[in-house]
Length: 131
Image (tube, rainbow, N blue to C red):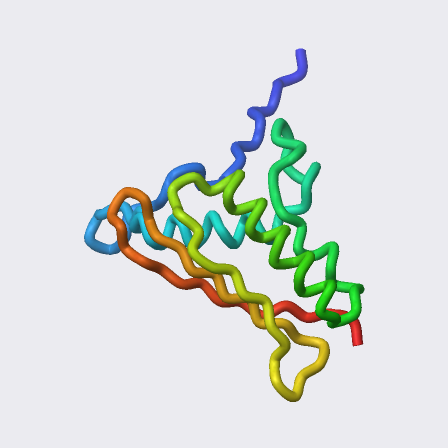
């Protein structure tokens, strides 16, 4: 009779590992929200299983020209996506502007307030568009 081999365990951390002092490093509320906003903006709809509408899909604009219309569409998309998917914040502003001297880059500034603490936060990122 052939001996069965044990299945290989997947070594993928589902929970955080303790640091050198034995403490678990969970993100703060501010960092958790910041990470969630980035995930929402970078995820394309239909990319997540069981949540086919989740995400903004900013990457869909990579091949667009840097025009006022494109910037307006990105602004509206960010506003709609964050209002729908990140309920821990009150969105105060979204600004999408050209980076001076770099016509293929956009600067995205997002201002928001954490509902739980009332703290105001800012998140900025740069997008690269088609030349």
